[in-house]
Image (cartoon, rainbow, N blue to C red; front, side, top):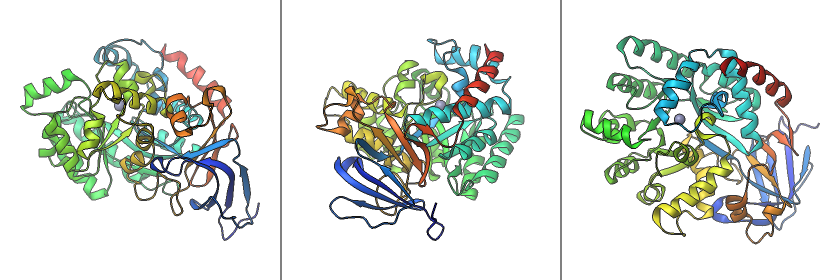
Amino acid sequence: MRILQGFMRILIRGAAVIPKPEAGVIPKADVVIEGRRFAAVAVEEEVQGPFDKIVEGEGKLLIPGLVNAHTHLAMTLFRGLAQDRPLMQWLEEEVWPREKKLTPEVVHWFSLLGLVEMIRSGTTAFADMYFFMEEVAEAAEKAGLRALLSYGIIAPTPEKIELELKKAEAFAREWDGKAEGRIRAALSPHAPYTCGPEVWKRVVALAKELRIPIHTHLSETKEEVERFRAQVGRSPVEWLEELGVFGVHTLAAHGVHLSEKDIEILAAHGVHVAHCPTSNLKLACGIAPVVEMLKGGVNVCLGTDGAGSAGDLNMVEEMRLAALLAKVKTGDPQALPAPEALSLATWRGAAALGWGKDLGTIEPGRRADGVMIKLGQAHFFPDYDLLANLVYAGRGSEVDTVFVDGRFLLLEGELQTLDEEEILGRCRELAKKFR
Ligand SMILES: [Zn+2]
């Protein structure tokens, strides 16, 4: 293959394109990728060759890569395990005892399993918080996805604080900026109710020193927020603000139970909230005030949460659920229309992960992360509005081609970087120990 000044030139020819959700659908365009970035979206004009690779786009829809802004990849291990239970009961009786048996090997293979699932449903970037994060990072590097990764700090006792912070810092120093810049690190105190003020203050100082974001859980269940208010005398959001946490780029998952004041605080500090509709529904946490947050100026994005609590890692489903829940919560069918739902899963997610200026749309100069969806299936007909079809009829399984930084991870249905059969085989074996 010819390499032009070290860069590949790729043409995606004649696809329907959604360059950004607000722009709607271009029925037919030629998209040029040079190296790691989009170079042109040509509608009328002819694009100039030569190209190192031409991908036929006819009968396909090209969209910006989907961003899963909150997950715990290796929790694919717990998919289908002791389901339909309250969150704390599920964690305390089923998950935490099993997590004591986790090994680097298990995290490695179940992260790869999650990556296969994410690639096949159109995710190109994700934010992950868990244990043995070196394994998650290596898996992400191998798969070729973009990732914001962090070790999940849970520090209920003073002795644990040192140990946990050390692990989190070592991972961040080792991995931030790795994989040609596709992997970035964050710091992740698990939640306000699992980490005390000492942890938060030290995390803030370290995040400022390393210039990396904080990724945490925030106000997920009603009981958690009520208990916190009773004990601390304020909401978790008010408390984190007082501790100075929001002076750092913060990505907070859930935000289901927020007061008006909380939303004002989140907006004032530019906190990004990852709405996780499936997980919130399945655990009966409630419906996050997404419309109120967006109106208030909070950047809302979308996440699946772990597959153990959410069932799967499918961002197309999350988009649909987000749109539907916003309507039923507000009593307004015009709430969170399809283009806005897609924005949550694309450029808003990119901004939440810290790639805002560089990623999230298909425009010249932006990072070349994209997804091609195969049209022509019954549930995608007719084509009055392919964006609406994607949000309201999409399943994720139509995803045919996925690329990150101009590199193909899935090409016409074939995984390019991962061996799916090997991964399934290893996971099948390893899962036996966790039954
Ligand atoms: Zn989570």
